[in-house]
Length: 145
Image 1 (spheres, helix red, strand yellow):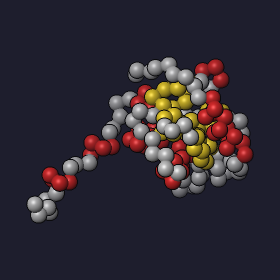
Image 2 (image 1 turned 45 degrees about the vertical axis):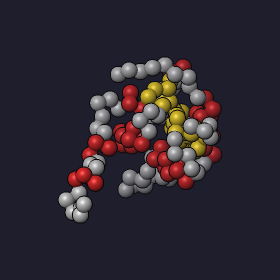
Image 3 (image 1 turned 90 degrees about the vertical axis):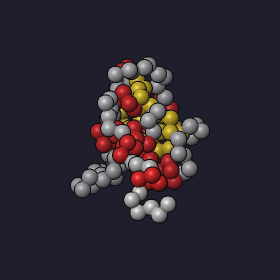
Image 4 (image 1 turned 180 degrees about the vertical axis):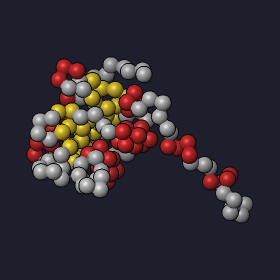
């Protein structure tokens, strides 16, 4: 693991904590996420809990960011309701975040141990989703060219 020390974006943590405190009510929404886009904007979202495995706050945030035209994210953080503080992304979110934003930074830890790490540090030796995609122009057996 090649963990590098980076500045912690406390404004991002505060934005996610605000959503967790004011929008996460009951069992349907228990986590909030905030991300800083490359242009400096902060995008926020909340999870959609459901017994079938609804999306985590980080995944909802990816869709929200795209809907707002923010296609390049710099840093992301998730915060739990009930003043649980920063919560690291689950395994599924780590894989999706790595696939979409391989240079993304993630805020993890608690209290004095808050730190910003690369998404690749959270998912070392990972499967690369794009590796399964073949160049269809060269390998399409139905191609007429």
